[in-house]
Image (cartoon, rainbow, N blue to C red; front, side, top):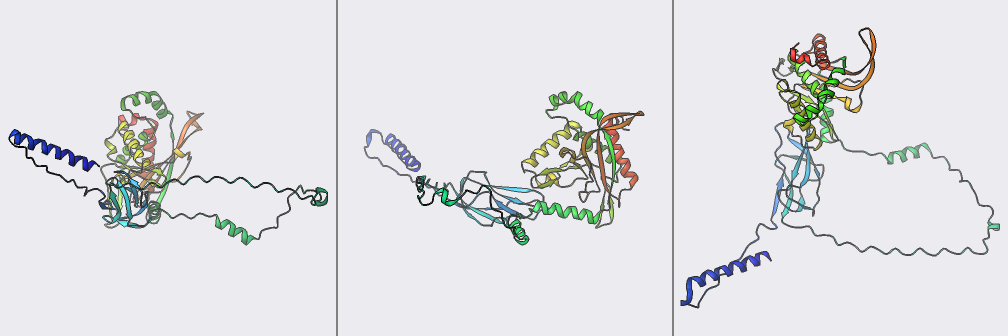
Length: 409
């Protein structure tokens, strides 16, 4: 209809200009017809897998749409789950899914054809079936007069005993209700890396406790001013991230790594801290880069941005590449104590835990203070006990009294 209206309009304009040119001298005019084309409409295009990052070569496809579904432009059609993150594949245009070229759960590589899309088409709406009229229940049959209650006998009030079920039948019955789910690629990769850490590193853990009184009072006193100026809440993570950067610069071996191929130790003069974030698909570790040059506000903003991307499943591989040190905060789940596992190829990881009121000795007297246990797991091949303990005590000193940062003590 739109093409016909455009053709009529163009014909009228052409007639108008011809009549003006001829004027009153001639009554002969010519009508030129225009024909529009809808070649782009209903065009079928093939959508391919987007290019992966350098460290990722393949992934498993999980379809969000089926054949015949209508999709809008930029609507997600499928997700490709890689070792590190999930890559969403949007529709390049509005249309209908014509064909899925890869089965659900199948492995795909970069540039591989995924599905065919018919542009501009609309899926046919299934007609609603009329609701079936429920048939009236059959009338209750009358009790024959020959079956009187006196002839039947008393009505039982207890259930008859059930014979015991054999053990084999119970096992089979239980097995029928078991659920088996295939491990996703991210979970498989996490398992592989954790096992590599156990097999490669000589892991040892040292512990300490941190009095959170001063940092809690500082946060309570300045949280409103901090929020008003920086538009972000002041948390405890920024204090531990900044304290870790300060301690890493003081103890370079904790920030170093062993290159097993060249048998060399690589010492870094920068601090990129990975922060462990739990997601429904597994643990991810986005990286805060250049922490040594950040203040508390910069750290809080970066943590908030990375956490938001993780919750929306929008983390790219580049957001998780690198990292010279990792912090894992199990305290958000109520953990009191634990030993973290090193995130390869790093050499150490700091484990934070919950804050609990405990009795401690202060100046020869017992006081109730908010205390946190912290744990440092390190690769004993590179880091000796002296460096590890000194590193953890440096974190303790900075968190308990942030003025240590200002005085560079």
